[in-house]
Structures are given as C-alpha cells and as structure tokens.
Length: 493
Figure 1 (cartoon, rainbow, N blue to C red):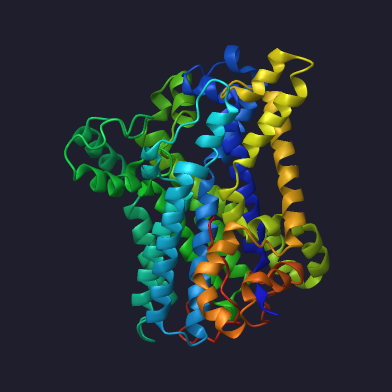
Figure 2: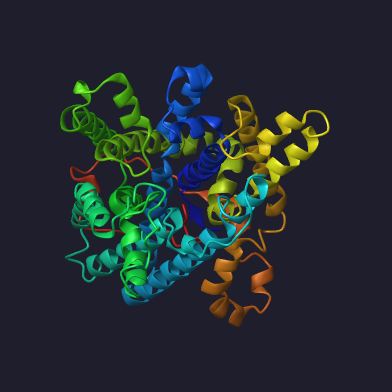
C-alpha cells in the first residue's frame, strides 16, 4: 500500500468543487449580470446580492488554489520518482508528454465540453447551440496547468543534474523569481498587446480581429493569448503555480519537515503577501483617492487579476493551505481514522479532479431539469433556470447546494466501479497502459487508477516530529529517499 499526503487531496477537492460553484454563479446569477453591466449598487443587487458578490470576489477568483496544489503535487511526484532511481531524462520526457496531452485535452474541452459552450447554449432558451472554433484559443486552468508542467519539468531537469545543484533553496529561488516575472510586467504586456492588435484582451472581444494581420496571426495569437487572455492568463496566474512548486519543494523533504518551521514559513510569507497586496492597492493603485464607486469597481469588476489582488490572494491561499496542514496533516497520528472518514467526499473530488472539472456541464442538465419540474406550476419562475445571468440569488444558492450534492453522489457511486470510463481513466490509459498491459492484459479494466489503495484504504503519510530539530531543517544537504508510490493521475487542479 502506497503512502499519500491526504491534505493535498482534501484541498484539491475543495478547490475543484468551489470552481464548479463559481462557474455556475458566473453563468446564471443576475448579480453577475448586473456586475458585468456596471450596475454595482444596492438598488440592483440588494443586500443578499452584495453578500454573494463579496463571497465571489474573495473566493471566486481562487482558481489559484487549484493551480497552487497542482504544482505542489507535480514537484512532489517528480522528486519521488528521482529518489526511486528513475532517470531525470525519463522524468522530463514523461512530464512533457503529460503536459502536451493535457493541453490537447484542454482545446477539446474549450470547444465542445466546457460548461460555458454547447451545453450552456442548449440550457439557455435565448441562444442557439453552435460550435465556436475560436474557443480553441481560450485559456483556463487546464492550459495554465499544462504550461506549468512544462516549466516545472524543465526547472526540475536542470536542478537535479547533480548532487551539488540539488539544494532546495536553489529551486525555491528560481520559482520565486519566475513567479514575480509573471506578475509585475503583466499590465505592460497586456497594454502592448492591446495596442498592437487594437482589441481589449481583458474584455470579451479579444478574438474579434483574429487573423486580420495574416496567416501568422493565428499561431502567434495562440501563444500570446496564453499570457494575456481574459479569463486565466499566465501573466499573472503562473505566480500561483510558482508558489505551489515552492510548497511542493518543502513537502518533498518528508523526513525533515518540522511543523514549527513549515507553518512558520508558510504563515509568515502569507502575512507578507497580504501586507504587500494592501500596500499596492492603497499606494500604487491610489485607492485612498478614489470614490466609493471606483473602489467597488476596482475590487470587484475585473477578470485579469491586478497586481494587488495576486499578492492578497496568495496570502489568503497560503493561510488556508497552512491551516489545513496544521489542523489535519500534523495531527493525523492522533485523529487518523476520524480524519479519513470525514474527508472521504472531498478526497474523492481531489483524487478525480480532472474528471470533475471536465464534466462540469452536468450543472446545465440540472438547470433544465429544474425548469421542467417548475414549468407546470409557474412558467415565469421556470424560465429563470434557462436564462443566463437571470437567476435570483436564493435560487442560485439552492442550485449550488444541489450541484454539490449530485456530485458527491456521483463520485460515491462511481468509486464502486473504480472510476473506469472517467477522463482520469482515459489519461491513465494513454500514459500507463502501454507498459502496464505488458504485465497484465486486463490491467486497464481492473483498478488502473489504484483507487483501492489511494482512496478507499489509503495509508496517509504522517510526518514524525523529531524531539531535537536541526538548525537549518528545510535546507539540509543530505536527503533520504521518499516513500515510493505509483504516479498519481494528471493533477489538474
């Protein structure tokens, strides 16, 4: 039975389920509709609308949590492979292929499967379902993670070239510099792209002039759009992945982790990020000189994350992650059985995060089902469920709760079939089946995701806390091999 850091599954599960809720809100809620029209006032939103919008501002842009945990898992898995004796050249080839596969899946997802494309048009009575091939240029968490896989794999390859270079502080420094390099230049890169193409990439019409500069405009925009697109541009979103890689570096030193220093560094950096974000908001963005309406617009009405928000979000995310580790991971030796029972649902979602995000269009079927149920009694209210940006707050909250309940039921039932047929299973078939089926021709239809040992009867890794702590615990030169386990499914978070 392989060991597993279950806190990562728990956090990733919450992150992916939270993403479903946020997307449902941004597709259906009348509050979101008012916000996009600039009608952010008490008359239109009401008190409940303001509360809901505030929650979305704080949590809605937390796709960074998904990116952060994915990057942490990615580094941890590569380090585990290296300690098991796998060549760094093999690791690099495996990870690059994994990133390419995820990127290709992302393009299919954005055009055909995403909950905001064909199924959303079908659920909305006011639109017609048509394939928009320009969605292949869309940028979201899948492509963010794919690019992060490329970057992390390359950094890991050079970092692991010899014993002298395999010092944690070197990798931490590289990712810190990379993360900042994707944050501070972001506004200037966006402005330069807007001026060159004559469109607003932060608005909804970023692809309007696609291809007008010649054939080369298509491939160039495909690359550039990864950095400056409206929804989840690498500038600045890669900063969340860089922070996650740093967390993964600390986690990969299982035998040397100190609760005191791990949490101390984590909470300390989180506090600095919050203070720096506040400084940027008040001083650099001059929030103190703005009117109340301008401040509300600055803090709520944006798609591309401004600099102050990136640092503030990183601070909040690190506080959240460190709190989970403090409450769960470092207390497992006392509450192991209880923790495994109460976290089973969130661990299912985290374990199968690729599938949950890929099948998020289920929410559109829930909308149509509610419309069919209510229609015989009240046609006007029934149409709320099939009108984008037209659903009242109370019904949005109800549908969010219903969606989570449906997903928890699906994951519970599907677990009994070892998630065969899921997107995670398809990835396992492509990445592992050629070698695994040489040993067992029926491997693909048994338990290819290793659900039995990684989820159902998981053996959580419990960090011992030595009585005498080394002076430089997190940055020692000597390292012991990590416990070996089979590779996890493609982390998507």
